[in-house]
Image (cartoon, rainbow, N blue to C red; front, side):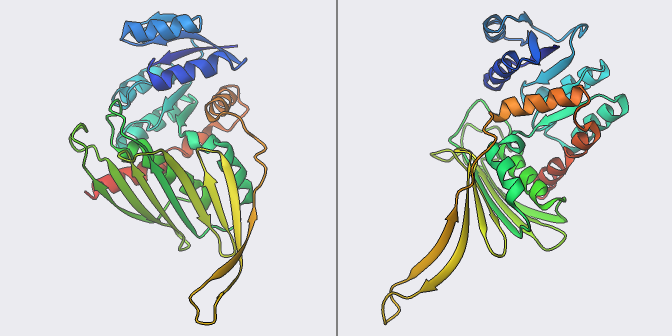
Length: 315
């Protein structure tokens, strides 16, 4: 059983603590957080030891970094230097060159590295992957109410997920990208965007368009994958998939004012309904134990990071 150290005992860190403790493949050995009330609360809940800094990693088999994005770079370098497998929440770093450095350091040290691009493990996404044959156009919406605790702009925090999924569905990185950003909320950090939109063009002419916002009044996580003869709608919150095929369209009145459309609807069964965070942790353990391809996982990280950095550089 793996001994896991968790860095960061905030909202996301507490979720990781629960998943590790209930996995059956690992135990939560340490919780690292400079804020003692949060750190001790999570540590005591799951029978772990609290420390206020990372320190010595002797006896630790894996590390999860769920600290603030701003702390990822230094922590990731420290963990990799110690030769310990690392799961770091997305983004690796909110800077492409530093993210690439972390990926290259992990490769040089032969240390397994997993970035928390969690939507890859969404049951609806996993189901859709088996059904999508020839996508030509993807649209996505990822909107949320405002969360003051998140200091990073929505490009690195939200948009990166849908860019990553689009790359996965099309099977390659985009050849060009363009976007726009909006800065609206008075509580946001300077130059941290509240709204982002992106258009990605791929090598065979396919297109993806993504919208991310943190000034929405409801949480919305939807993705629509268009093929020439069908539409695959993915609800990432409800974790379901609906497939539409247009059958016919006719007018309902002689003057053409009415309209009738026939569409066939297919609702496939979601066969893998596991919590994404638990599925992601299982994949992390598989990487550590040699049951998954460490090199392929590492190589899949930077595509979305490169796109986000390029979009922000256009500002």
